[in-house]
Image (cartoon, rainbow, N blue to C red; front, side, top):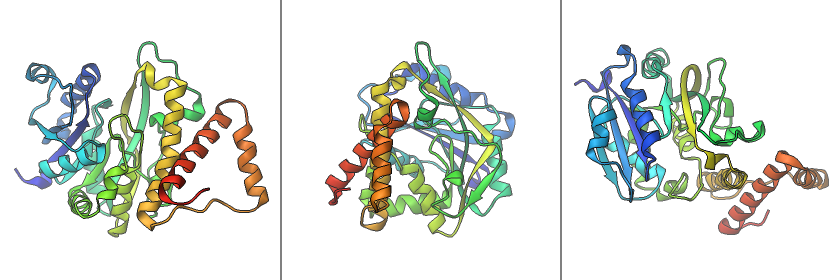
Length: 307
């Protein structure tokens, strides 16, 4: 098959929840006719619990395979998926994402219409499972909620609105191969995302930024829509504060990897007083500020500078 006509869907997973993984795979089965041809690869990332063959017979789409990646970590699993697929466009789908029926077809059209983009993603709607109590609005982005009402793109790594996220992220083959090759020589990047119970983030943005460094753009599009399945445990305050701390830690880690140093916080008495006051606020805002400060302090301890 001509790789230019093929889309590859890569699903990294570590000890997956069978119910959520089944919904993810059934969502791929339900893709519109315009999505085809596409292949689906599940990357078993060092799982100690993994569904048997009979499970996949019930829900797997056509042109389906499983590969095993023993290096624990989401980035390592994504790289394995890049290496084991053939399509000219790769779509990264988490094992708790359900793509809308037109997702792959829309991703294919975006690839045709925007040849100057190397990566893009879209809207993420939170789908709370039974027993889950939706968290405060301020914290919902830490569960990957994203609302995009118009297409936006740039080649500026500092432009957050156009930076794609890993849920449903589309990556051209040229970027996937170049990034995989680079990571083979720069293992620090493997620490940029989830690894077992360790909440670190940023592997998806690192891929997008790498595409910008290649001279291309990144984008976010409203026609790309998926649901992110959220169990009750991920709505608990303790988990969410760990996630917020992990995001702050990861932001500084990413800066350290890219620049060899940690970012400088704004100086001066007024800036310092403002940070202290925000941390003292009651409610979700103050709790988030304290978690962010904790994450930055941890990064400073590990990488050589106290904030």
